Length: 84
Figure 1 (cartoon, rainbow, N blue to C red):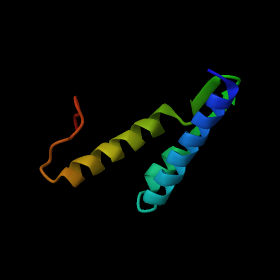
Figure 2: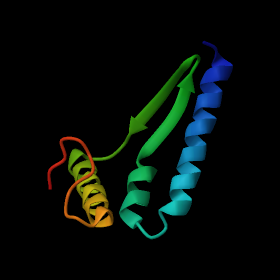
Figure 3: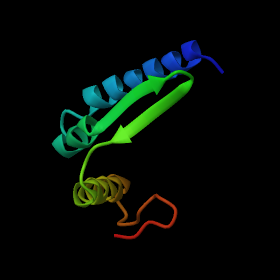
Figure 4: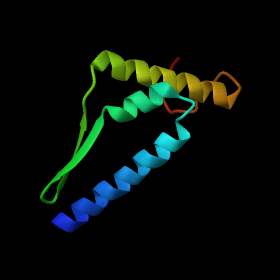
């Protein structure tokens, strides 16, 4: 709606990044994935860019799914359509 709203959205995303960084200290692969995300504004538009190879993104995703399955404790993935 405005440049100011776009800037506020970026601040919210930066807050999520900070929280994820604090909670991700035990998960270095998650921190690597976060470092690949870059956010900026162009007027009213918020641009989110992922600067990473497709193979690395896939690997990060696989590790996240493995942790979700492990955390659940029953060997099942909690995500809809999820496969090991």
